[in-house]
Amino acid sequence: MTFTTTIMPSKHAFQVDAGETVLEAALRQGIILPYSCRDGVCGACKGKIVQGQVDYGKYQASTLTPAEKSTGMALFCCAKPQSDLVIECKEVSTIKDIPVKLLPTRVHQMERPAHDVMVIKLRLPASERMQYLAGQYIDILQKSGKPRSFSLANAPHDDAFLELHIRNIAGGGFTSHVFNEMKVKDILRIKGPLGTFYLREDTDRPIIFVASGTGFAPIKAMIEHALHVGLQRPMHFYWGARRPHDLYMLDKAREWEARGVKFTPVLSDALPEDKWSGRTGYVHLAVMEDYADLSAYQVYACGAPVVVEAAHRDYTTKRNLPADEFYSDAFTFAPAA
Image (cartoon, rainbow, N blue to C red; front, side, top):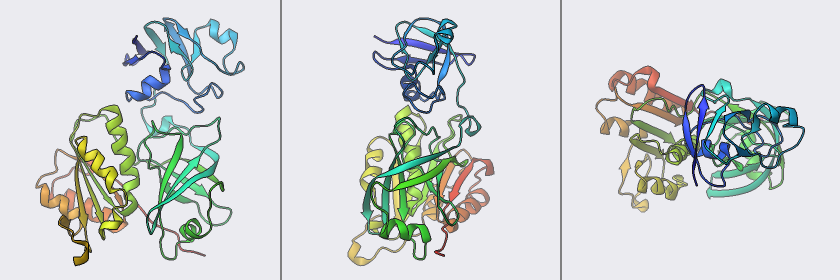
């Protein structure tokens, strides 16, 4: 059985399937409600039931008191509808609605999809979740030295772990630690979510994604989020790298391609032994070769500063892209002390 939940005052409505909580159903359909622990402990998802009945589920008694329940309050991470609902709650519409947290995390998994790329999954404490928008990043806080920033590579709906893609940069202080010293179960302190590089969903403009190297990470989060919520906008993803092995999650990009996301890999330094038959050259120029006019598009670019800067300059001056429709995140690194 499916019930309809309507949010006031926005009047946004969504369907809740049998066995789903209000929060789960909302997030599944691209409606972002506040949350943190997802376990009835923190109270971040508390809202009012104006009309209808729910199974309140299991939660910590001090988080939702009997007095609060008597006034119609519920925890939407636990509450499961037993009828159509009308609820009152805040919706997350911009990054200012999402709290920035300081949290401990534990290294859960480390994998090398390429010789110079490490994919790390961080586990948050059992009572915590980090709410974020697809494309944002976190800071890893070090005992000495500046924080190191890394984009979140997993979409917000898939938040059991925080996924980071880290390239081994020659002379990079933290990246050297990751590849030579870090091990599973290490504890890291993080701050986030941060940044204004996130997928805008309040427009019908077709999207062009441009990534170089591990700039793939936030683009991955954006595309997986778009597919998850059923975003009905044309999407074309360009991924630039030096040689084929640098396209370290090529199978993932091919999966998206099968689901309707156009994909163009571009190699700048392919060798004869690579037997590469695809596009070559610089990734931002490949976009210009394919699109003579970007005036109706939205572009998200991430990766090496030289790529992002060239894309911004050339798309706005030579391809008519409105300056306010170009969103970017340029990667830099801190040298070893």
